[in-house]
Every structure is written in structure tokens, then in C-alpha cells.
Amino acid sequence: MIAEYAAAIAACSTIQGVQEAFRAAVLRQGYATSAARAWIRLGERVQSQNYFRNWTVQWAKLSDEKGFVDKSPVLAEARRRIAPFTWHEAKEQNPPSAAEREVWGIVAEWGFRDGFVVPVHAPRGYFATISMGSSEKDLDLSPESRSRLWMISLLTYERCKALSPFAQDDKTSELTSRELECLRWVAVGKTDWEISVILSISSATVRFHVDRARVKLGASTRAQAVARVTLLGL
Image (tube, rainbow, N blue to C red; front, side, top):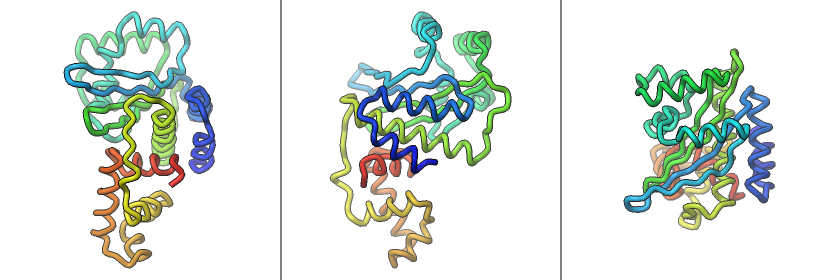
């Protein structure tokens, strides 16, 4: 499923196409709303970009009127995390402020029960989220489902970033052939030890090459680095 989705996303020539593909993919997982957004700090100023919002007109209007972006507990939690998390996990981790309680209350009034959020962190204060919400009670939050949503979200984000002029910073030309080779094996699910056997190098050397590639790509995790080179056809 991931390989098929990656191919479909790579074939999208517009963010609208990516938006529709992601909407359909997460809807099958029980998430009826979704969004992809990014922020970057430029000196004292923060510039933002909405790649897409698969929201109803009414919810988008309410969010803008209430200024949910500035007081969203989901965004506050995403800035503290690297791995994906659910709304329930965010609530349990940190007691909400008065403003955040207001947001959670309105979210509940509108029938949303839970959501899933994928944070993306990069150099120069760059930050993005791919998030989705659901009104269903029994969402599949197994490790397999979470991993699938994580990779689908990262592939979606990387394609949106590639199709947008916002905060472009291509570092792929700086990758060495060995770094790219190691990332390719990571992409097909090989462990550091398995890659070390295949390439006749030590596990520590594999980790070194993968981490160097991740840093060059401005990725905070291996999964993000793999998503980036996958969509670039590398």
C-alpha cells in the first residue's frame, strides 16, 4: 500500500492532486478531515503556509475566526514531539491551558473524538504538521496502522513541499553515493546490521552514513529522510 501511494503521490503535479489523494487515503482509515501546514522563522517574523485543508467551509471559517492556530494544543504538542501522536495522548501528556481547553471544548462540540498528528522539524526553525481528525469511536491505532499513517503523511508532506516555493532548500545534491545507498536499503526495511552485511561495512558505519544523509536532507527522522528521497526518485 505504501509503495502504491508513493507512486500515486509522485505522479501528482499539483498540491490539489496531493490533497485529494491524501484525503481519500486517510478517509479509509476513519479520518474525515485533514490538513498540511508549515511555518518558518525569518528573523523575528514567522512565515506560514497552508498546503491544504480538507475541512468543511464552516469549520475552516470558525478556526480562522477563533484563531485556533495561535492557541491550538495540537500544534503546541507537535512542537515538543518528533514522533506522531493522537489527540488523546496530547491531552494526557500536558494539562491544557484555559485557551487550549476552549479549543478542545469546541472540537468536542463539533463531534470530533480523536485525531492523529505527524510533526516535521527541520533546520532554521522550520516546522510542519500533517494532521487528521475523526468522529469515529474505534479507530485502528495499532502499531501497523500508526506506521502506515506516518509514512503516508510524510510522503504527502514531501510532495507538497516539492510543489510549493515555500521554504525550498534542496540538499539532495550533497548526498554521497554511499549515503544514498544506505538510505535505499533503509527504505526497503533493512536494519543497520543487515545493511552492514550487504555492503560489507560495520553497523556503526551504516548508522554514520544514514545520520549524515538525514542531516543533509534536513530531516528529523529516518522515515522523513526516506520519504524525501523516495519522492525524488532516488
